[in-house]
Amino acid sequence: MPPKKRRDYEATRALVTEAVETLRKTKKTEELADAVAWTLTDEYIAAAVYRQHNVKNPTLPIASTETERTHLKNAAAAAGNTLTADAEEAFRAFLAGTFTPTKPQRKGWGTSEPQKNINVRPDKELHAAAKAHGEALADELGWKPTPASIVIQHLRRKYPLPEPPAGE
Image (cartoon, rainbow, N blue to C red):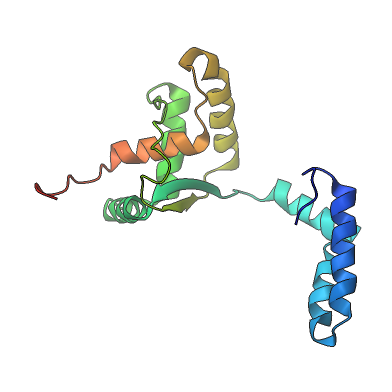
């Protein structure tokens, strides 16, 4: 169970240290205990922070239904595109002012298909510029367009889902 305060790193460190000692009591879990202990070292933390901030193009997860995700992947492939290239296209259009997403409408709790992620890896600088532009437009639009909302709405416009046959 995580500590009461999410940002209480010292309490988390103490709990993980206790977990390491508990795991070490059983020979079978010694390797697991060593792996957990390694994550507490300054060397591991520095490497993780460096990697997080220096990854070329971090993953942008976008919530979607499985049906929509499959459709979008197939439609992009059929058009000779990748969803990452389409995401970058969405950001460029948003930054140029030729595409502005609308405020997403939320469905009621439990009324939609289970969600699956669409993962794209757009250019880090383009992603950051679109995020900043969305924040700058928040007051004017009455909501803050996020990178994920920009991309999913652009994809839905570019590759609309076919209408289901009548009677279904």
